[in-house]
Length: 340
Ligand code: HPA
Ligand code: ZN
Image 1 (cartoon, rainbow, N blue to C red):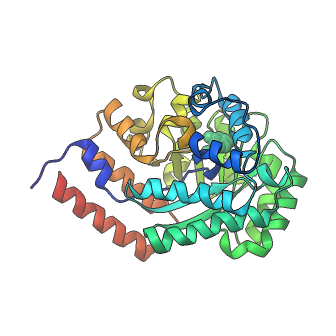
Image 2: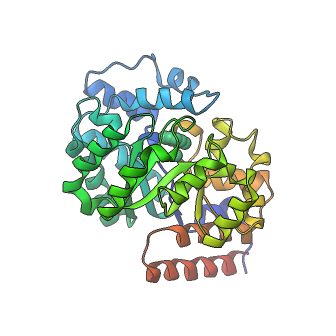
Image 3: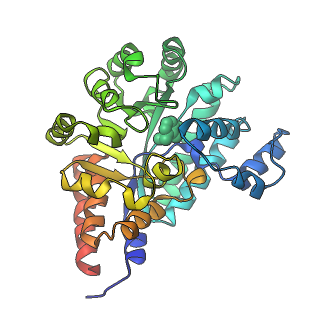
């Protein structure tokens, strides 16, 4: 039996990512390249100056920069290049399946058509499946700082592409924009056949997680850290085996936790919550999926068994078929046996 380092163990294990905003994978180098070809201005003189601006006190400070960056995306090719760059990057990290968000309103509000956005993203995802062997699901996220009417309009625009989209989500500025604001549009989205997820309990209170569960009838919670403030809620999430898509490096960068050593993921595993590891907006938060796993593994001194449990949780929480899940879980158990 070989013994490999925790770094190599994390690199080699087949992984899935369930909480990833494609606009959050926009690396400064690609941003400058696309800005140049579209003759758009970025208010920073260089890649390093832009990277230095990535210091956030909270979610809103991040969102302001994230939306500004997304402004240079204009053509179908831009959305293709963005998505392809992400897939190429994570293939090197042994990611085999992704379930990713896109934010249509960030683009349609600037006059870019829904069609341009989704066609670019979708063709890269299809190429990723054929050429890189990465399977995928696509999640359309409503921006919660905008109103219900705008979300309904987005739902309408998405209907011709319904077969390409698995779920709807809810992201952007959380505090002051509770899930209840979107109860009706989520109801209509479910009627149209979409699965539902929502960011809840990242900065917002445990109450928002209750609302996401009971009003939006979600299939997964994005983040959900704040459930720990409410024992009854934790019990409910455990009973339901409701997946939580945690994002450790994001939590540190957005001051949701003080540092990785304070991250509650191990505590959450001990409570039998179905927690998963994800990268959220890797171009902004200093790491893709492997760096997220490695960060918590080192900070919390996690074992290979614990890492394996987290990876298996992600496959369980994914929307792969039961047969595909079973195949991946067997493969991962075998990987642990060979490398522990
Ligand atoms: N939270 C809310 N909205 C977002 C995030 C996030 O972490 N990333 C991109 N949009
Ligand atoms: Zn997110």
